Image (cartoon, rainbow, N blue to C red; front, side):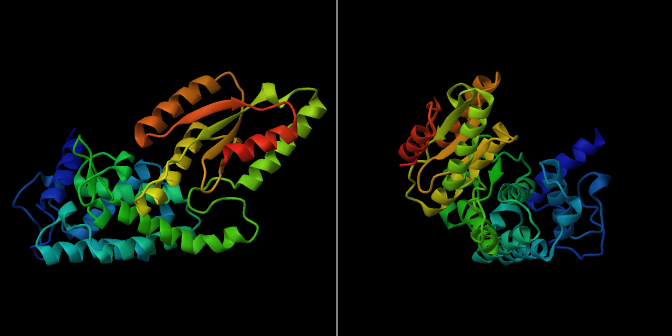
Amino acid sequence: MPGQVCRHYLGSAITRGEGTGLHMEPDREDRSAGPACLRVTQPWETRLRDEWRRRSLATGWRMPDDWDTEAVDEVLAACRNRALARGEAGLAAVGATALAAACAGLGRSRARAGIGIAETIDDLAALFAVLGGGGGERTGVLGSGEGEGAGVPSRDEGGRWYPALRLVGAIAEGWAEESVSQFSHGGCEDPLSGLATLSYLRTRLAEVYREAEQGGTSPAETHRLLVVGLPRRPDPWRRLALPILVGRDLRAAFPGGETLSLAKPGPAIALVPARRDLPLRYARLRRNIQAAFGTQIRMTPLPGRLTEALRLVDELAR
């Protein structure tokens, strides 16, 4: 119970700027307010780093030793400098151009370490969850918070904060810049979404049909295609973020050996086995996709012959 009180208090204190250390000597204890667990000698930036790391680990960061880098220092410094310039702390301090540049550097650092794009964006969302003292959902990444295109974070109806699209775009672009060259040399994945290319989907279809022929089965009975439409967005940051988040939802619904691909600039297309639990997985994914992005998803069986299946994929990709 005391731990819960401390965590709750720290989230709200960061938002209000209380007990942050911005207006006191770094090595002096702050006994002005708050429970004893917050009376620490660490400056605000160090406490923010610790809370950011803890929340990121709690929301899926897989390699604790790889989290702390110089790029993390740069993001924290951008938050601190913006706060000092405006005389405030927390989310009101976030949104400067310097922070977007720091996020791009963080994206490059994560790509060099082999961290995936979804995990990288989740890490950024963890920072904003700490700054806002709220939960770590990802819906608000595509929210319509006022001014978000200029770098202002968005907040949902429940009061939870998320990174602005500009910052999501910055970290994704930095990640892509660092990783796109290795993907371009024989890679089979789109660097931003992490989904396979359409060429790889065609290769997998050929393998599925050969396997079915050897086993005396039919892909029309054993497999399905899921097609997730990606509507055109006028905002470049929304266009960038949408396939990233759709790719993450597809991987969450189908974490096994399913083939999840992206037809650029068309839809996402998944080749999945027609197992017993497929209708339930499909229903959940459809609810999530439609609720979060307002886009359509449909399921279609494979035709009996490979040539017809390849023709179907070409039609769906338009």
